[in-house]
Length: 98
Image 1 (cartoon, rainbow, N blue to C red):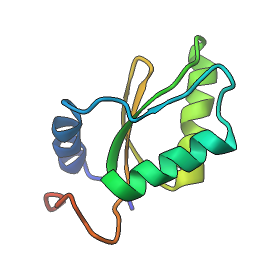
Image 2: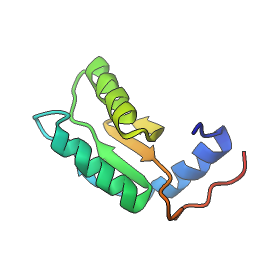
Image 3: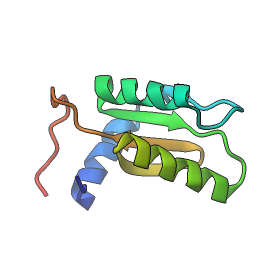
């Protein structure tokens, strides 16, 4: 699923008031962190993840791995905060048309 610019802008607006639900620790991207992200996406559809990485390249690799493993859409990355969206079967968020 590819999000249009209009849909990403809509999701950014919804995500603005959210707090990060998953905080990555010093151990990096582990199976436990991925399973927490999966649970949060299934429950909320739109989540923020705080990525603990100091180097830009490392952070980008972690973000890419999270997106690949969860099959979610990256809405945006600001600083160490990643915003992810994945539609659930319940469809809690109604996206605008493309």
